[in-house]
Image (tube, rainbow over all chains, first blue to last red; front, side, top):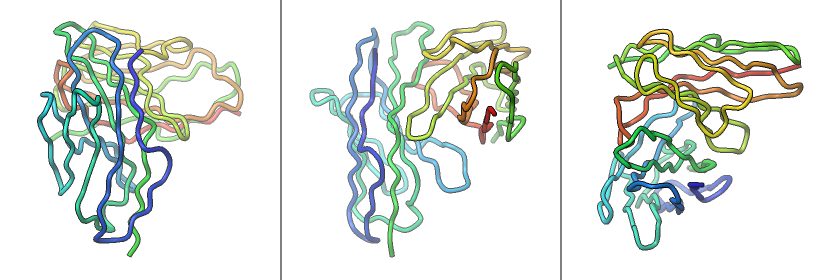
Length: 117
Length: 113
C-alpha cells in the first residue's frame, strides 16, 4: 500500500538554527500524489501547514518550505531559522488524486520538534 | 471560519462494550473522516463519508461502524472495545477531493479498562 516515512521521534534544534525534517513517500495506488505537511502545536488541534499538488513546485508557510521532488519521491520540510514557537509535532501526508472517490490521506508517524533557547 | 466539535473529550469503557463517538462540523463540508492515532504512530483512516448518505472504509475499519446522520454530523462506533486499548480518535472534514485541506477536531481519547 501507500506509505510515508519521515524523520522519526524527536528533533531538538537551537533557536535561530536551520531545520530539515525528511519525508519520503511510496505510492502504489493509482493516482497523482498530493503532498501535505500538517502540524500540531501544543494545546491545539492538527492543522495544515502547507501543501503542494504539482511535482517540482515548492510550498511555503510560516517560514517553512517544502519542495515536491517526484524523482526522489521526497517532500522534506525546511526552515532556515527556527523559533521557540515552532516547537510542535509535524506530520507529512500523502493523498492520490485519481479523479475517483479515494480521498485517503496517508500520514507519517510524526516528528516532535523542540526548539531550545 | 468553522469548527469541529467532538464528544466526548474523554471516553472510558469496559472490555466488550459498544462505544460511540460523535463529531459535528459547521464548515458545511461535504466530506468527513474518522482517524485513529496510537502513541508513536501516524493517523490511520477508519472510515470516511464523501457526502451525506455515503460511507467508505479506510484501512482500519474492522471493529468499527460509522454513520453519517446528516451533512454536519458523523458518528463512529467501536463495536467491541478491546481491553487495555488506548488511542485518540480524530474527526476531520473537507470539501470534496483528494487535494483538499482537511480540518481536524480536538479528538476523543479512549481508554478501555
